Image (cartoon, rainbow, N blue to C red):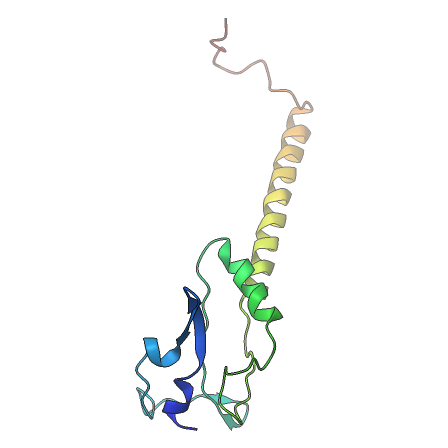
Length: 134
């Protein structure tokens, strides 16, 4: 369980060649800040945040991560257990759903208030300006 063992993890493929973690990162023993630690329940853990690019690619990438096998060959050294701790996409989707509902509710309430006060869905003819239509 040394830092060098993580260097062989394949993180991407570019032009048909595997890109390993050691190709794009400097692997060192120990934490950058020795006062911090990664824990999952009561077990020491190495926490890695995976962020997808912004935009429509995010949903496709999320499905790729979810459909990937739990322990693909060569992804982690022996004895390392990989688990997803959090998935923010569920809360983001719930927030978007709530915003849609609130927007629809606001439109319905505005139309309802206008109808109740004017007793007519058409615009009133007593407006102080005239339509410049020919």
